[in-house]
Image 1 (cartoon, rainbow, N blue to C red):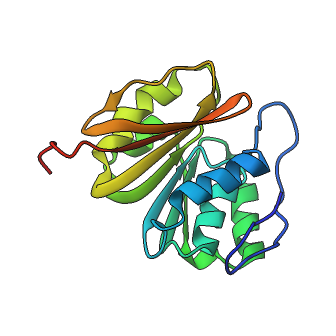
Image 2: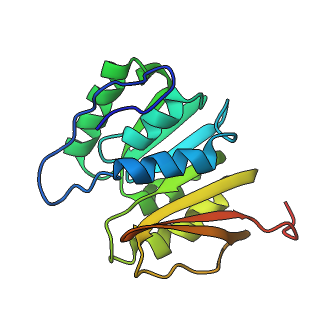
Length: 183
């Protein structure tokens, strides 16, 4: 696992071993950042369920102003912190040891971009998606990684499903604010 491009290009990242961890596959990560490529510069990025921090760190490497990385696992967050230090992106990273729902109820926004990749088939994505939508800036974008057999809702708060991308058994679903929503 490595940073693909930007200021930390090529930096190798650590990850936890075991079945509790499911890093985003490299080709899905490349696709994600192709989707977000012109939206990152100077933006505030939320990496919910951060794991090793690879997505938040990639966002920082590509020009995001700040990445907030949230995980309920202390072991995962410790690895993310080490990866941020290794890539020298730690000054722009904020780390939160918290359950996603509890963190979002503290009203931590606004975020310009959010990436959600919770454990698969738990219902957690469907529970946090509307909470994330409440914390987004007016021109915000939410991207969810999930298994292709899991159907996500058409809307989340003022956000509407914009596009879906399939990569084998993995989907990326993009939500954007409904243009008719009062902001």
